[in-house]
Amino acid sequence: MEPRQLKSIRRWFEDYTSGYYRQCGKLHQLELKERHSRRVAENAGLLADDLDWSDSDRCLAVAAGLLHDIGRFPQYRDHGTFYDFKSVDHGDRGEQALREDFPKDLLTPKEFELIAMTIREHNKKDLPQLPPEDLAMLRIVKDSDKIDIYKVVREHIQRGEQDAIYPGLGPEGELSLPIIEGLLKDKKARYDQLRTLSDVLLFQLCWVHDMAHRQSTKLLWNRGDLEWLIDRIPSTPEVKPVISQVMEEISRATGI
Ligand SMILES: [Fe+2]
Image 1 (cartoon, rainbow, N blue to C red):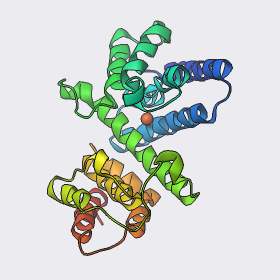
Image 2 (cartoon, rainbow, N blue to C red):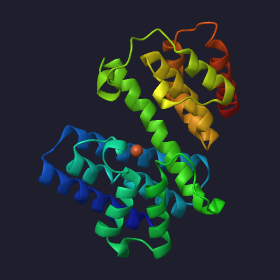
Image 3 (spheres, rainbow, N blue to C red):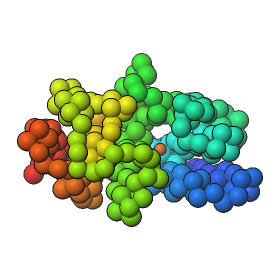
Image 4 (cartoon, rainbow, N blue to C red):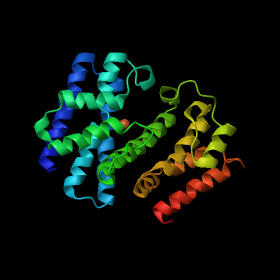
């Protein structure tokens, strides 16, 4: 993809979001998604640089990052929520929006299908069964998306607005045993077991194990997002082994 194509895609995204602001008013929730999309695009560019991708693939990754959440706009307009289980799957809805609203001549058919797949699959638990070269775009977008969520969570908590992203959580300081055990055993925990803010922070810290690229963990480390989480999580004897696993991953990624 040429840089001028990326420029046209940026312009289309601008028009697309403006269209929703005209219909729904300049809703704060939609603005947050617009800004998130732009930052995910930026993260995808940084990772593509770090991974030595060609200029053309880099542009495509930036475009995929920018477009990955376009389903959020019709989702919020039609259902007033970002909860997929209460409304629609925003990956599927995004693919539909791309097919309906995106000008086909801005991408080659192959690029178009790659971006459609990336949008559809970015929020799914497992990667689809596709050749590795097709998955590269999806993996970079999933990492870029996660990287931005660290920032969003940190900023909300620093402003004391955790209720806006995690309503109804128990107080910070206590950690639930099933979470610690799950993270220790297979580096995973179930969302429905998260009870306290500290559970959420530990769970989020352990996303470093899910990153497709070590460069993603390195970027988070350099931004201070991981250290911020580690400092904030109560360092009880039960938690220490979980943190050690995370530290090992960080050392692998950063070479520290
Ligand atoms: Fe996203």
